[in-house]
Image (cartoon, rainbow, N blue to C red; front, side, top):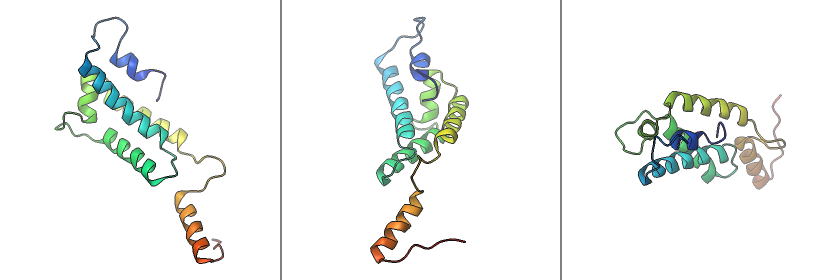
Length: 126
């Protein structure tokens, strides 16, 4: 997400001090899935994909430690600095949140679609 193999380097160091147990691999898979949902759906056009991104972001920003598979508990178990990962997520989002060329914000697309359905002329803001 933020650097090549940040999760694999942290979760599975090459020096052999940590064993890649099935439980550890599960935690890495959960974290990697959240990162993928966040990254791949940041500028999504469908409501479902935008929801996936929003839920992943909310999970990563949550300070909940009661749930076994909370972001904080997984990062602690894997030895990942929570604050650093969140900071990298914010920086990544800032750089990638800009809309792709030629696209409109979701609200503008919806308003445009609604006008087309009602055969209304476009409204211009002066």
